[in-house]
Image (tube, rainbow, N blue to C red):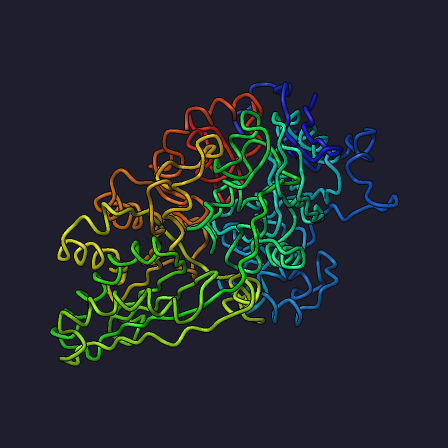
Length: 598
């Protein structure tokens, strides 16, 4: 039987889980091809089950597409899956996340689907591989109701079939797809309703909220919020969806003011504690969120501070490293003063052989002059050390640009036609850093950590991002709203990411990812643990093969999450890399098998 906890009449929580599932035998692997429990054979009997119609019938009695159709099939002889999307259109749009988001089986990081049926020219494409379902799910439930979702969950669990969840497919770590799986597509849960007097559960008070389907992306939410005169804490990229983003924590351009997206959920604390940062695709499926709505800012400001070495000689590079350390150490003060944003640092081959940093700054309810005055002391601290006068480096604080609202600023940092993050290959270990790692150590120590972090596998150059998503916002979230989110967020200022691993796209993904993960775990993860041993990481942008994922991604919440997982997913149908309990399983991309480790 299934437990459907979706409440649609009062919008308190639409969260579909399954419980009391009967385990079919003592099977060491989830169902796969040629196995008697495999999805295709099971569906032969499923079609005679009344529940089949419950799942497949869509609006007005239509039958949504349920068989996986490989998008790039049209690029192969005979178009084996009868794709209706031309090869030309597929190839032209392959790197656009919004293109993949609109299709039920397509995902933004195809390497985690074993580079299945890629179009010519795509990263990882080989003609010999051909076009097959491969690492994509076998069948897809194009869900439009909570009943469809709960029925599909119960049915798959009773038959030892893996379940995966896709909203937009923006996920960077392969959590939106799975071989031989039943995929539940939440794309069509896209309602948006603002309510300024929503009754808070268990209280006599009301709250200003937005009730939003998990299939939405943040552009839709921000546009609706602007029309309603509100602001919602959401993603910083236009193609990010609500579903997995919020469940993994969800850092935001507004996080340093209001906390993370997971901190905005206004449902029953005991019931839905795990979705406030406990990870996506593991315990159940969220179809709708009730989130805090905040007053819209009266203005938004975008600024830029750049720093780069004027030469490649040792003296210039040393001065640049010292200047970078001063800037990084000064960022928490900028955040305490009300600024947000992110800083991108490049070194070596990534930036023409020099060290460079571009600091994008956001300000709300302020003027351009105010932002400039807030940043000026940091620039002065760099100049006071003689860095400007000797010509070794260049520092430039551009005149900030003012916008009438947050949405206009958001579109400025996500210009139309620049959503191309799909189809790329990367592995991004990350770490949360607080003042202990940024301001409470010597400048020489900070330089040393920065140099280690920016050392890539090839040794030719490095790339690093500092997100200004911590600070006062996460620290001030009331205890009863904090949920399962890693406690490091409450003291962190910066979310730091490095991308130094070399991912070989000329070999199969299993070999390539295994090799890259080995280097990351032996090198980059050790750097993070040396720099910030007691801090955690942001699981949505992190190494999916981190052996210390329990401590780094879940922290003190792990044991409670494991108990919740056991209660609501006893057959462990919901598997994701570095998910709760995932260390008990082995997922092989070459065979597609997901098997228990003995």
